[in-house]
Image (tube, rainbow, N blue to C red; front, side):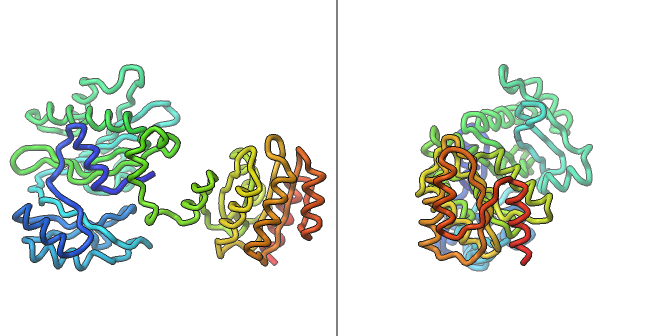
Length: 377
């Protein structure tokens, strides 16, 4: 789950990270009022869950409250990479002397949280990694002992932090790590962390991604989710506890089990096709969940055929078959479907699907070949 900038920075502030004064506005009038309270120059920033806001014109400097109203009027309603701007953050403008990148991610190869820093702040870290990899400094953090002061000192030295700001930098880095761990984040970054004209450090931008699997123990964080900025198919899938990711192909996939789902997608690619999604209905799926999964797949206009691959262990094949038939009765899909049912009650499931005129397959290879052929015809 991705958080908006203003949400991320408010969490950072709870851990002692200095952020600019600012508030969120949903109308130009509100932006004017906030700018009036802040006084002086302000920055009006679009709040959408996508990168490249500045390049798209979604971040503008305003010299006073009248200008802030005009800038908010220009930004609100903008389309930035397919997302409509509904809110803007009006922040006090910072006197920026220098910009630094500071972030935390999970390095699965090292099995560690890794803190990354770069003296090239204010630009995409991916761009820095591609063009100036030597400008990125990494520190792997042992989960048993946490982030240590000597690591903060090493980072500060490598990034060229002025000596008088080393202590402040260490507090910010430590606070960011604590925020990352305590909120079960998969990403937390400050870009940029700026050195101001009066010699202070300030987090003028922030981003956090929270592990969906941990939200059950973070009610306050779960309430911050903005479904209007998420893929509607993924929102619907979450409602039925389905694992769904939309892809660019035209063969819809409905499978039970993440490993089997990946194998199914690989087989589709092997035979020259392209999967339209990853969808795992999980073990013990009911007819209702199967119907919901099929509705989601068929809602994608790119889907030309559907491949259903079910291994019935906990999940009963006849339950899956009933869900498929129920969904077809509801949505009336006109695309061909290839079904492979193996396992518990497979004979009963195949009988149900035979009555519905489905295209059966015995092996995964056969099912993938049939699905690819159908998608191309």
